[in-house]
Every structure is written in C-alpha cells, then in structure tokens.
Image 1 (cartoon, rainbow, N blue to C red):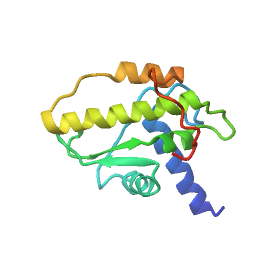
Image 2: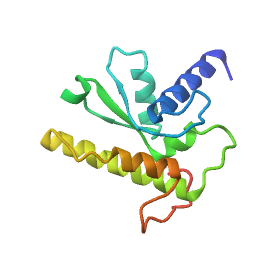
Image 3: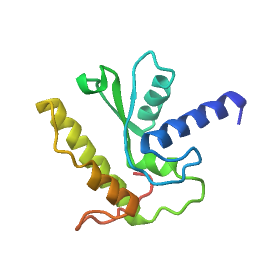
Image 4: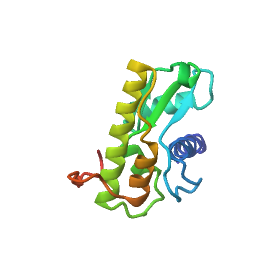
Length: 144
C-alpha cells in the first residue's frame, strides 16, 4: 500500500471509529453514531468518500449541526471500524442495524418537527450489549 493510500485509509478508520466513540484502535464500547463535518473541514472529503463506499450516510446540515452535514456510520461501516480479526457476532450486527435505523428515523423527525424523541440511551445500550430488539434476527450477511 502506498504511503498516501495508507494515510487516507488510516484517516477513514479514524473517522469511522470517532463517529462511533471507539478508541483509536477500534476497541471500546460504541456509544454514539454521528460525525459532523462542513465542506471546509479536512474530514469532509473523507466522509463523502465513505458515503460513496456505503460505509456512511449523509444528512444535509441543519440548525442542530450549525449547517454542517451530519454523517452516520452504516452497519457495514461499523464492521469496518472493528479491529482486524475481531469477532462480530450476528446479534451485534443486528443491534448496529437496528440502532442505525432508529437514528435515521430520529433525524427525519428532527427534519420534520425540529425535535425528536431521545432514544440515544436505548440505542447505546443495545449496541454495547450486542443485542437487537425482540424479533430482530441477525442477517448473517456481514456485507450489509
């Protein structure tokens, strides 16, 4: 891997891990899922590339983000943020997917109403425990 590509890859990993609240090495408990970056930020092109690769999604900036865009890690992006070789049980994958969908719904509510029901605590608990809501089955597809 060239030095420039390696630097970009490390920057992308940093953005994914920081978005989830993980340590630099990808370990720790994921307790959030967002990254705010404006067009003038050094991280903005990295976030946009991660969106293009399906590892993040982008929401247009609003009053809550100071006009900067909000980037959210997808379940696939969350899997990439884990340290190499770290086990990712199916239940944890389902929990990430559920948390991601809940956050997307929450942001749509903010867009529509200017506020949203605060469910962050429940999302964080489910993700850290690696458990999905009742009835949610793991997909078994680690490339989602």
